Image 1 (cartoon, helix red, strand yellow):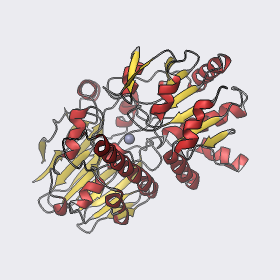
Image 2 (tube, rainbow, N blue to C red; image 1 turned 30 degrees about the horizontal axis):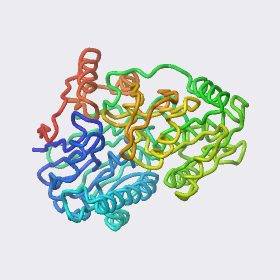
Image 3 (cartoon, rainbow, N blue to C red; image 1 turned 180 degrees about the horizontal axis):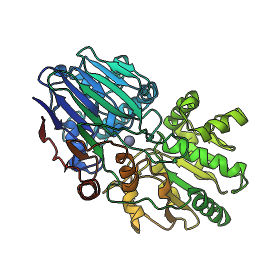
Length: 463
Ligand SMILES: [Zn+2]
C-alpha cells in the first residue's frame, strides 16, 4: 500500500520534503533545507530520514533553498537517481546551491577561526563539491508535458507562478491502484508582476497543499503607490532606502517595478545598487528566459528590446570592497541586498550602517520568519544585534506586502475552486501551525473537503 511521509514543511514553512513509497518505487518531492530558528536548523544536521540510495527519483517544485537546499546532502549520502524539474529551476539551482555551499563553508571557516564550535574542526553542512555533484542529475521537462519515468510513474509539471520555473507537480501512479497525487509546491499570486498566474489543476486523489499565508489575506494596496511614496519621502529626507530581498525572484520583481516607476517618472532617477552577486546571476537567468514571463513583461521586452528586469541607474555590486564603499554614499539611493530576512549576507553591514540614521528607510518586501532579524525589525524592535553588537533602530521601518510570492488564503481558495471534485484527502503543509489549521477549517467549511494537517515525520497510508 502506498504511503506518504512528511519529512519537512509540516507545522513550519521550511524543509519541504515529502517521501512517497508505493512498495515498488520510492520518490521524494523536494528536498529542502530547514531555515529560521535554531531548533529547526539543527534538523538539517540529522542523518537523512530515508536511505538516499533507496530513493528512485526526486521531483523538484522550484529552486528556493527551503525546497532544494538539501539535495547536495542527499547526493553525497548516496542518491543516484534523477532529479526531474523545469529547465529554469535547474539553472537557478546551480546558482542557489553553490551559493548555499559557499555560505556553509564560510560559516565553518568562521567557527573554526573563532573556535566557537563544539566540534573541531567545524564542518560545513555541505561543500561546493557536494553541490556540484547535484547538477548532472537534473532532467528537465516543459510545463504541461506528460513524462513517463522508468518505473511507469507519469509526471506533469504546471506553472505555479511562484518564482520563474516554479511548478505544481501532478503524479499519476499506475502501479497497484492507480491514483493521482498533486503537490501544489509554493503557489504564486494571481496578476503578479513578471510571473504568470498559477495554472489550474482539476483533479487529484490526494492533494498536498501549501499554507504559508493560509490565515491571511494580502492587502489590496497598490505596490507602485506605496513604493513611490516611500522612495520619494526617503529621498526628500536625504536618506537611503535599504531593501533586504531574496536574490531569487523577489529582487527581479523589484527591479521590474523600479524600471516601470522610473520610466513613468513616478520616482527620481536615483541609483539602484543590487549588492548580491547571486542576484546578478539570477537576473541573467531571468533575462535568458523572457519567454516564461507573463504577457505584460514580454510586451516591455518587445517594445524596448531590453530585459524587463533591469532598470535605469542599476549597478550590480561585485566585490566586498565595492559593497563597503556604498557606506560612503551620502546621497539618496536604493540598496537591494540579501538575505531577505536579514539572517546573514551583505545586507547585515548595510543595516548596521543605516539603521541608526532616522533619514533612512528599511523596506521589507517578503515573508519574515519567526525569530529572524527581519521579523524583529518589522515588529518594532528598538535595537537589534548584528555581528555581536547592539545597533539602535532609528530608521523608518516599512513593509510592502504586495510583493509576496505566495498566494493568500483567498487565492489558494481560488486555485482550489478549479478542482472538479474533492480530493479524497487534502494535506495542509508548508505553514506555521495556526496558518495551516486556519486554511484547513476554511477548506472544510467552504468546500466540504476532508483535510489533514500532518505532524513532522508522520506517515499516512494512501488507500
Ligand atoms: Zn518558494
